[in-house]
Amino acid sequence: MSSNSSDAVLIATLAAISTQINRYMPIIIFLFGTIGNLLNCLALSQRTLRSNPCALLFLASSIASLITLISGISVRFLTGWSADLTETIDWICKIRFFVLSASRTIAFWLITLAMVDRWLSSSIDVHRRQMSTLKNAQRSVIFIIILSSLAYAHYFYCFEANLKNTPLKCYGKTVMCRLAHDLEFALVTVLIPSSLMIIFGVLTVFNVHRSAMRRVRPIVTIQVMQRGVVKERLPRVKKIEHQLLVMLSVQTTFVILFSLPQVSISLHRVIILEGTNSPVANAISNFLLNLFILFTYITNGMPFYVYTLSGGTVFLYSDVGNTSCYSTFGTTRTMCNGDFLNCTRNECATQRSSSSFKCLMYASTLYSITSIFGIPSFMKLVR
Image (cartoon, rainbow, N blue to C red; front, side, top):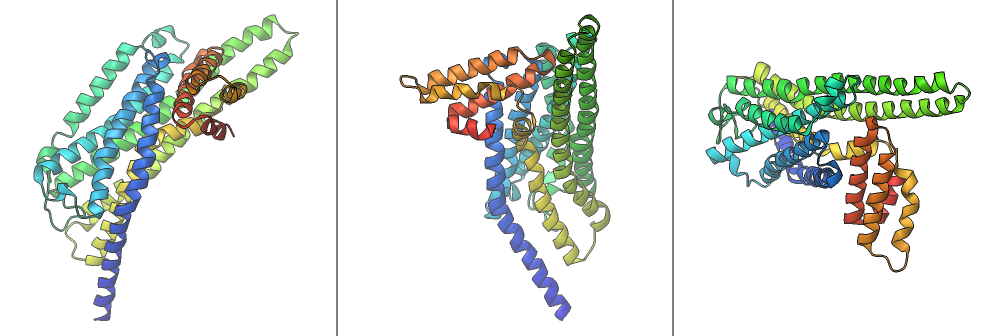
């Protein structure tokens, strides 16, 4: 009796904790992700970046991430208050899981294609550089949307509401449906895109290095006496390579870190726990799955913070003097914001082509921040 009593207490405790997590944790993730993606959209929709194929891919990825957060986090929040319609209405359950899975896959694959575009645009091969066009980026967005939609079309058959003895009431109705869902998430959404991000990220850094060396060598041969110029450029080249590698490493690490736990626990449930009669094991598994599902949404809200905080400040400090405009008599906030944007763009124009996109994106992001929150937010970010 004591054993059964302790098991019942443990099951009830895990259920209560899971309910509280679903009530409050989604709010933090939703605000965190929505603000980041909206700032991404503001930054990437600037006129300077509209003709950039990489910017288009990042913009489409941010929109897809917003859809993921709305279709995913809002439902998790309602679950904590027992107001989740996907648990009781069949067609809402099917549409929600289809939109959620497709948009999340689209977001990750568009970031991967942006990495491929970086590799093409930084190549010393002119034919590869010519492949980095706005038209190809637009075609890639359409292709990924269609392919992702087709990949998850079977969800309209597999998912049902009002299920019992499953971690979620809106879930795959058969073992094969659950296994297909978990394998698709593991391979198509997480592992394959992450692997390609790493491969093309490293190749991009290699291209930047080769391109920089081609520029440095003529200086070495023609201006042998000006050794100081060469020594000054080499550290800067290494700094840019390091920043690109840091951005890639941080984003890829977070994607894997926050996504694989759900993959592991889902596969464990399907392969090992399916059909088990242990209430405690099922309760622990359900608790972990509910927690890890929330973790996956963090990856859809973090790109803005990764690019801004780990992307370096190549041009930033040269413009700190421009902040005096905001305290000058007779100026308006709109005038100063315009001066700020023009100054940062001019500074970006002095950068090499290999880092111009990152510089312009960072400049547009800071312009969006100062336009919304004012110059104190800019100064805080500089520090």
